[in-house]
Image (cartoon, rainbow, N blue to C red; front, side, top):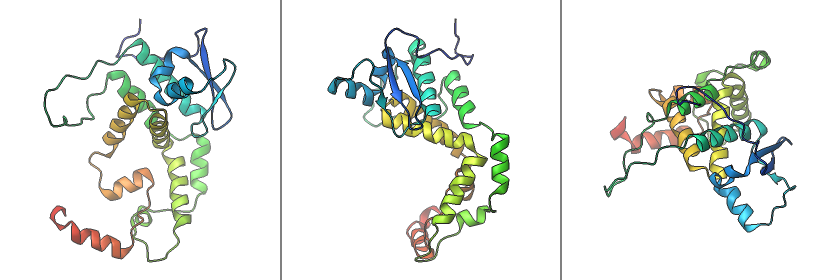
Length: 228
């Protein structure tokens, strides 16, 4: 029997009744129909539209790898349901925490987010033009075209930190499919990777280009002198 301290995965397409999806990269991925209610977007679609048993549902914004991770999560928590949230009679919303994941959820998100680059990705990264952290953090001049830098930063990030990109793709998939618990889990995993980082380190880590001009940056600093 699966235990929470062991990362165990279950087949998510083994029942007699399955729903098939076509991913953005052309793959066909089947889910047990019992998992569909956990995906509010798909559940509503099936209720509103007559989807035939042999008809695949297209998911143009989710690739095969990401969708299979969604299946892993949904099937595991079908077998091991998350505990219900504590009942609170407080008027104010309780403080959001990122350190209360289950052991399985923590290990699963770590395996995704900490995935190391493949040898092919390392070679491709070495072939890219240099892109220093100073470039990522430099403010732009009025009217300056930084589209090439932005794309280079994104490409570099995909190669150097593939796990970060996987986690962001999973987050977007969970939001699109309206899987609340998975969206919350991804947000916690991202928050944990932001803790203790400066703005500069955050941009370097996620490959985000500073898109403020000097004038905008100065205005923001002036408006927020209380927190600097």
